Length: 429
Image (cartoon, rainbow, N blue to C red):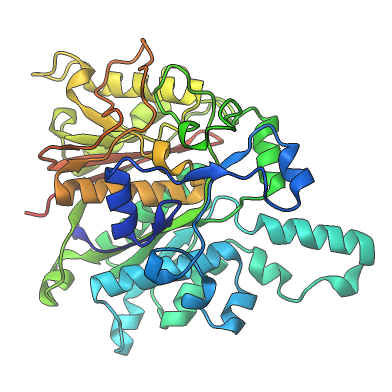
């Protein structure tokens, strides 16, 4: 089996445009969650019980903020859904970071894309439905379907760079980004590609999305007047997740290919594991068995013992049930490990306290954080963790980042429908 390494990173998050800006602000315990109560149309936003979100800051690229014209020409911007725009920008950053611009036909044929979204272009679906209901067929844009399809994020990336390797899209709710990276790593491991662009992108900050999640009682409602305090993974006073937008893209590469061109290697993709809860549409099993299976399989695939994991980036969205289930899964994973007295010896954090829940992009962005934890030997913090739930006993890195030798990290992602994935990264040796 061929070895797979990470050679490029790109991200757009509520903390800013660009992975360096995002990572530095994350380690400084800054938060990108803001109030959305005054967005237009105000009547639609203010009637919602949850009025906070992780929004991409708007402004110039030089300020680490988002402006579509910095990345796309007018025609591209008009043709592409916002989640695709984010994907294009994050891919451009990742390719620049990796120093990979395939020009030869053989290189284009061996470079692919595996990128998805959880919800995709909800705004266009909503707007077109309203227009069609009022004015009929002729008011439907010919761009409607191409802007709607989730695989068009991957499609536009492929067309922009002339990539003729695997062209694959993933949509597995909040596990999308992790599945995309894991699947892409296997395309390389099995010889279908030498280089893969992989990740997830999401842009669905829309009243309908918040209404739907609110009706399922998933979103936090208790901190509308204190947005930066609203996402509080593992805290006793957590009450739901904060919806957010953004994109994360990694460049994965076959080891010998990367070495031959002198690429910088961030980390090695050591393992990938998937599972299904087979339990409930939105809620995990209380014991976190599905999460446990995903972690167990990823570590088996990696050939790594649980006690060798130095850091876990938890999926932990700040929901009462989800955080408790993941805590139980981690405890089960560590149970019986020789040399471990309790799960408190494993360093864990949830970066959703700083950026909220990016849905289909969450797994990709959090994988990037796990990669950087390995590269920089730094554990990012869990913000707003002032009162650890008394049932939990892991070291959840409250409030501030800390330095620690990180040889192996594990990144978790779980989604509605009981879909779970875990990724294992390690230092390249």
